[in-house]
Amino acid sequence: MWKVYEYLALVFASALWSLNPAIISRFRDSLNPITFIALRASIAFSLIAIISYMCGGAVIKWDQQVALILATSAVLGPGVGDICYTKSIQLIGGSLAVIISYTYIFVSQLLASALLNESLSTSSLIASLMAFTGIVIALGISYSGRGSLVKGVLLSLAASITWSVALTFLKIALNYVDIPTAMLVRLALVIALFLPLGLVSEGLPKLNALKYLAFAAAFTSISDLVVGMYLFMYSVRRLGLSTSVIPTALTPVLTLVTTKAIAREALTPNYVVGAVLVSIAILITALNTTT
Image (cartoon, rainbow, N blue to C red; front, side):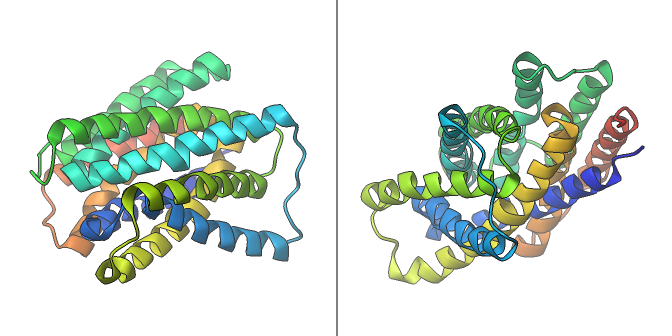
């Protein structure tokens, strides 16, 4: 039986995540990365807590080891990883930051195979290579010149690695806790650790930037941390980590569309070629995944 809902969930999550680079790039001059990440975590935590309470509350079944696993996932993923991602977009632009950061697809598959005993088939490797090739062709590697290239690239690579490790720990934790619990605990830790750090290291946001900061935080918290992450966790539980990360290769390709709509950038012919390759990669993965 085809796992249609899981793949639809991943495609929708990828579409939502494609909005984030465009929003961050649009308001990059108004965002303090650490404070921004903590603020959007605060918004997401409030929304998920309300929804969870209305639906009967989260189910907590864990011990100290599970708590440590979730804490590690929180610090590395929506904490350090997202901060590095945000800063890299500010420095080198969304397109280049996305293409480098999304090498997490390969790293996640390797970690899932090594640590989670998930099978890594030849077709999955081919699909990953094809998806990443599609990303490269669609986006191109052009430097916008807005900041330090070396620093931006290193931050993107850091995001890729920290996301991958965080997702590996998250997959383990999801064997013991439900999705709302995992989301709430991770967000609570991000708020507790990074909000004070942001205010101390970056200072208070400038008054003329507050409305842009608030909008960007609210928008990305809903699209990324609430809806997008729930759909991704749901799919990881059903499909496994190594399979779930492949359809997210749509995100960088779709970012071209969101960038055009939000930043009024022109699409290039490379988009069509890249989109086709990514679509084929997703189809290969789907055809080789059965219940």
